[in-house]
Length: 397
Image 1 (tube, rainbow, N blue to C red):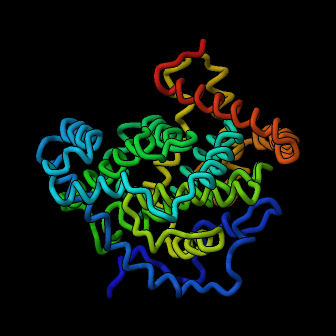
Image 2 (spheres, one colour):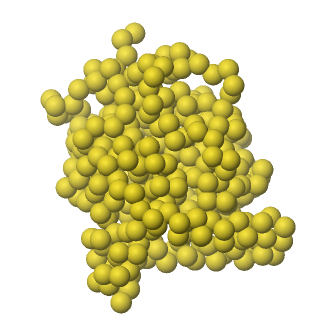
């Protein structure tokens, strides 16, 4: 099989080098298998040419034939009344809805609750990791971000993508939201349909080059994105002195394994533990060709985002948030990756290092005081919701 040209097994490839350098706090080097070889990535490269076929069939039936907005609303309405209406639906739609309604035996909601607690107790630090490590760091791969360029992400603005990411993350990190009948499932179903709709529309464009990038939003890139929300997210929080407990680590991985399954990633590809997650991430990240001008454009747009928000006109607040984010970029991405993305250095990293000292105190107290732990979970979630509300019409004077 001929792999897309993006697949680079050059041993001198420095892509995502910050992930694999031990800082004493990060966890990725700790869980990486000692005998792993880049050559193992060749058995994964075929997934650049595969995608969510079931999701695409549903998108064609609903979103392409009826129009995106009307079709999505019809799909969600049909999902709401399933299975009572199953005789009115196509076999493919029934298959999709059953995937969402029938909880697999391997799903452990008690464990997932430990994961949501971890996401919540880390408060705004969790959102900072999502923004400044998971999203910004993802721009180190030029190929995975090509669909963003083709769907006009730069024209729509970084604030829109950031808002959509927070929407999605908030919807599934609320305790119990992945159980049948809750809104977390609707959010995942919506996201899956957006992926399929985008893929169908992108592949209609002659400028898309499958020989270079594979299919848009392909299976291996989907797995990498899923790992960004799970093991990379955990690694980022560990760098901020908010390392997970054993239960929180397993719970966060279990949360994203189930979410990934519902998003259409084949179950046999989803990791079962931290070592598998780390190994899969290594094989993907170390075979990326790295940063191009589109990567830098996307990174710069996200860098500028705090200066362009509309929920406050206060220039001092905008400046402070802007500088703080650059401080997080330095601590989380490291100097090499931050500079390669075209982002400037800032002394604000010392402000973040100061915040990390507070994190260490809170983290240790959480792990030794169950009552304080629960209060921190509730407080952290409230902080996250406050940020979410700002991006949805809230105001700061």
